[in-house]
Image 1 (cartoon, rainbow, N blue to C red):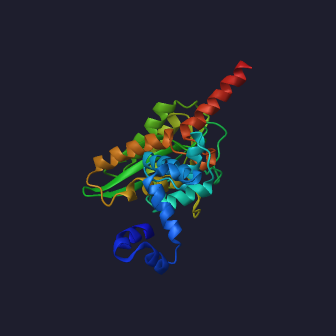
Image 2: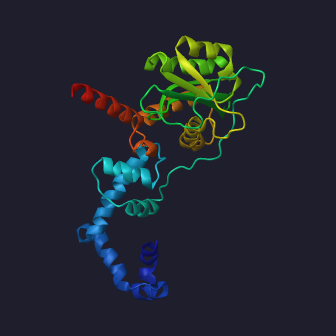
Image 3: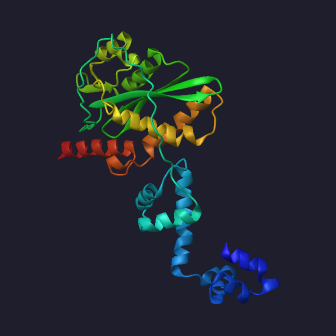
Length: 300
């Protein structure tokens, strides 16, 4: 900004008077002008910054433009590009790049006190020692020109991998059941070895849903009354989805548009998004490492 101002007025006023007015040394301006004319004269730090700026811009664009400095720093390390986190923060400020921030979550499920309710087998301990031990489920909504689009997720707690999902124009039991059916089909969990946890929404307590869990040998679990963290992990995924996809666009025209954007986000989330709680690696990579470790142990 300062260099551009001097360039604009140097002919009429001269470099030295303008530099005196701006309280900078003329030698500083001449040094920048020399580098602009011959980039080879730039300092090692300036040359390094130029390379890093290109890499930071690329990583930010390749990841839905949602990564902040910490995520970009970890991704640079994964690609073998060593640099300090403070350097990434400084260059992101220079590039005017920033990550997204999550807003407040909105409650979507309605509890029916008259419905029978399974016990809470999780007690806010959202941890699993291996895949297909604990799933959590929840849904959220998106406003479109056609009306609300409801989006349901089923998440494997071990690596936060989204194993089932569905988009629907209505929030009926069938659409959350479709997400469950996808998870069961894709994961083929071992019978009597999996817990399914949700909040007390009427969709998840419906007979059709609980019967399907029973048929698949999955133990139902429902959060306790009055507990704001009864389904915290699922609500966290909902929050990421809203911040990284839905709130990035001013409005959504159709439910199909939401569905396509959700599909792309889930593919990125499962295969490329870095998650801090699992070691800043993608969910699918965390699961692959687990199964690779099992294979090595069996071979030994």
